[in-house]
Image (cartoon, rainbow, N blue to C red; front, side):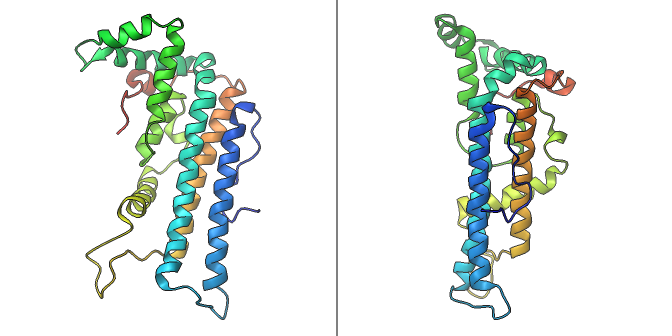
Amino acid sequence: MASRFKHDPRQPTHSGCLYAVAILRNAHNSASSLLNIFDSVCGGRRKRKSLSDDEQQDLLRAMLIFASAGLDAMVKQLIKDALRTVINQDEGATAIFKKYIERRLAKEGKAIDHHFLADILGDSRPRDRLLDSLISELTQGSFQSATQLFRVAEAFNIRTDDLHANKKKLDAVFRTRNQIAHEMDVDFAQQEGRTRRLRDKQAMIDFANEVFGLAAAFLNQVDAKLSGTPSTVSPDLAAKGIDSELE
């Protein structure tokens, strides 16, 4: 199916991105199917109305949720399939990984976490154990904000500006996503008996395009790193490292 949205992902050059691109393409297909259904029952000159207003709105809500779910699943797949390799071959990612280890070994920022240290040193492959710990932390829960995704980008030594130039716009997208996913889009301040927010079709398409744009940029950046593109650590990332816990 041809995507109804921008940023349809290209074929990656590295095999470590193949599962991720398959996930993203399926997200495009699902979101496109929902938009096609919306147009078939609500669009056209005759504006057929076989669905109620609430059902039409749910199609738009579901369209954004599928796009966001695709981004979430794709990034987690990249963490599992590609992060270890990137850290092993990218000097910047290696430096950031070392900062993560420093933070992880500290207990409340003051003393060594002896339990964690013993767990690592007692493992037959301590470095792999630390990488497993990082991957586990980064894939816990769902990504519900641009900030969370940018923290994952830090682990890959990817600059925020290489993913998206307008964080405020992304914040608006994730705010809408969270209102739908966690609040059923309910707004009790609505008047005239309605308790759910009304969503504009074009605004929701724009939001989905922002999600897919971020996903494509993330995928392309990781693919470039896996393919051996030279990279040096970003000074701001090296100084800050990776937060050990995602908000």
